[in-house]
Image (cartoon, rainbow over all chains, first blue to last red; front, side, top):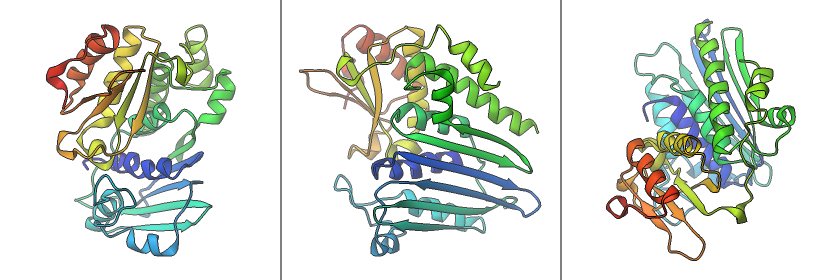
Length: 181
Length: 115
């Protein structure tokens, strides 16, 4: 994958398939510590210890349409090529947290990419899931909470094509401001 | 852009909150690892944008996992009540916009793009 944002979109699909109602995505860039930390937390069905152990194996999947599950192994591989790692913390019936650490200035690190598009896609495709997203960068941050937005706008869903268009503008604007410092 | 600005933009133009049963078509974008890495996110963007541009309000866009044809990603499926699902593969944003015009607005699938 060419962007960390695409990995995030992919990993969050696991949360959705696990029946999560709430998903939290955090991206933290810390120039001083030379790290990018990405955390994806859900309240989905979770996994037992055995499953977590086998998750980093590319030939392991719980689905039957294909014999390989590549999402987590790919993410881990990307992290390892730039001095980082991926950890999984999960409890059956409670949920899962995937934490990835990258060296910010590593020459092989893919760009963070279009986080606005990733968060927008997740919100648009999953009207019944609430997302909390936070992107922090050296003290500044852009944060989004879908429950808060719905409440503020007085709507139940954010996925009509028109609404999606406004939401995209809002997210892109937030990310641009963060990038501009 | 603050939340207040979003509210101002949305007020009076929030679109229709569709219930599952009321949709003429349901479009399921394949969002497996294969789909995401092949460009599913951009397909979704083109789909939603074209629906908004044409003011089509009776189509639900949702997602599905790997459809078992990873080499034909990005893919999406168009479902309609009482009809066989139509599966589109090797999609691009441009082809997606054509499908919105011909199939979702016009009612005729584009056979050439199906798998």
